[in-house]
Length: 401
Image (cartoon, rainbow, N blue to C red; front, side):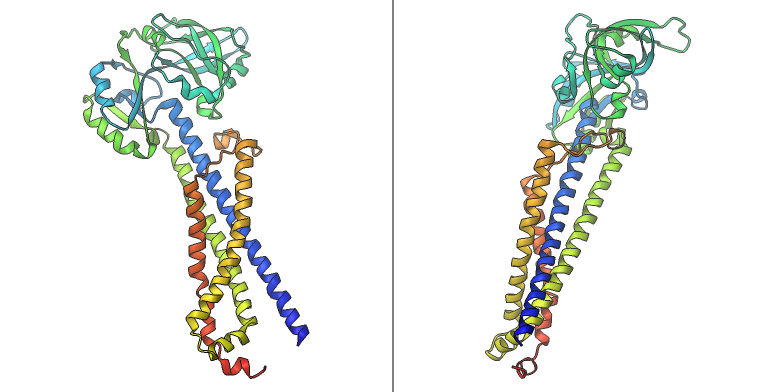
């Protein structure tokens, strides 16, 4: 009899350890999935917004093209109409022109993005890898910042001069030539930008296209919350002249945003699977505990204890065991989060993921909701195996004592 008690005790102890480990690994995987998934979504959204704004206001012809085909008048009244929307935090004027950068030994097709003195260079600070941003003022500036990718292809260094060739039409025989001075390199990890963009003075585009000083290609509008982009875009569109359109960032890069929206589904699948695995293991452990203590249950029933009271006792025991697993799971998950956030030891291919380091983000609210949600759902589901207690008869389990 003593041997049997020892055997039962060791079996239940092992099963409880396995269940605790399963809960710990499940919770750790949930935290890692949420942190990396949301981090990647946030980083990609930020990068696309930094280079384009959340909303682009331009003529309808320009909204269908990557370059500025026709201009529109930049007026204080038009800007005031856009800025009257409470969500808007900044507007900047741009004009885009396709061109060719050429050195003595090589050439590269580029998109020259002309910007004005109101351009928020601070947004690009994290992407500036060498040099500085162009100094733009009233006079035309020949300073430009190019991507590190283009610089490597053309063997350019900070301070080098590079020739740029632009055409207004296919019939133009002699291209417009501009000589630019490289003052900085940026690297976003976003191939769409790194392989094509050159940023410089908008006055070059205006002069090449023979536009007036107050004619531009587009407004890039930044708002407080990307989740409000559709509503804000619709509101601004109603305030604009009939020849201007509003293109939302989520529609301009629809493929990218559809791809990152799949992360939410993947995270949900991981959370569901991990909860199921954890609950199955905890249910097994709880069943073993109940069966091992069937004589104690029978004794409590003979003393007048109701089934619900006994169920609560075992359910509480199961929650305590699960909480121990959650504690270890949180430790592992947070260890990964902080080590990746500050150590950046997991690298990604920017050609596929648009970032070279796996970004992580996890708010206190996310952390609390995940823990309380997992614990709450598990507690409800653990009530099911505890129902076996109602089927235990005191006369059966106590007659062998």
